[in-house]
Length: 290
Image 1: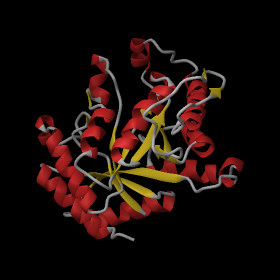
Image 2: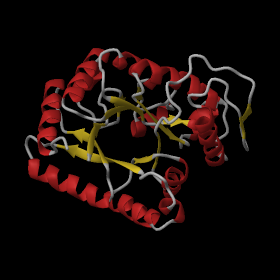
Image 3: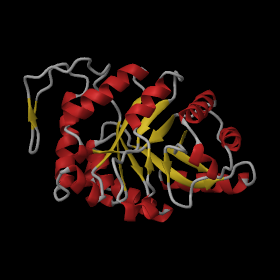
Image 4: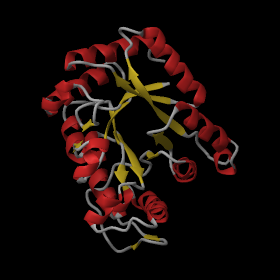
């Protein structure tokens, strides 16, 4: 099992973030990334929202740092840890925008990108950006196929249900064609999309029981059993406190593993940056490097 973190500071959810995050800057995130890398964590995350409606901020929060900028900075201060976009909303971008921008990031960071994507759920943001909310699932599926066809290809060509391109050059080109694509979401459809079109599933907003049942059903599907590679399953924890309550931490990790988790995306109880770093180390001791 791999360890990863849902990065603090970069996304601040109402009533669930620590007060020190309110004034933290990118240097604090960089310190965290360097320590997580030293301890052998697999990746850290950064989400995407362009703008949150005022009335929804109290539910979803209003702070969402941009992953492209953040990961470009962190790439310069780290060497091994991976960067997972959690998630890019497919409908907000033409597939070649993602291929060019995140392919360049992948080149800058030395092939450490995990391309986490989703179809989105905030209609007001779709409306603001002038992109259709209805039919976003079908568009997202075609975008995934287009990204697969174009990533790491200097002169990509694709013809699908929503996207059609050829005769264009992408330079610089991503350093590989097989970037891991993980699907985020909180529905059974997101898991089916991951099984059929992705390399991993990274759900959010679901209970352990819901995730376990979804995975149980997915394992019985033809698409699951016809996959050439195992599906990465990155599950988020509740806020863990491995320093004060290591036994409860072990129990939650065991339950997530039993549900089908392959990567733990950890959240922590923390009251300062130093406390967060101590929790990182304590969890690493509970889950030693394999």
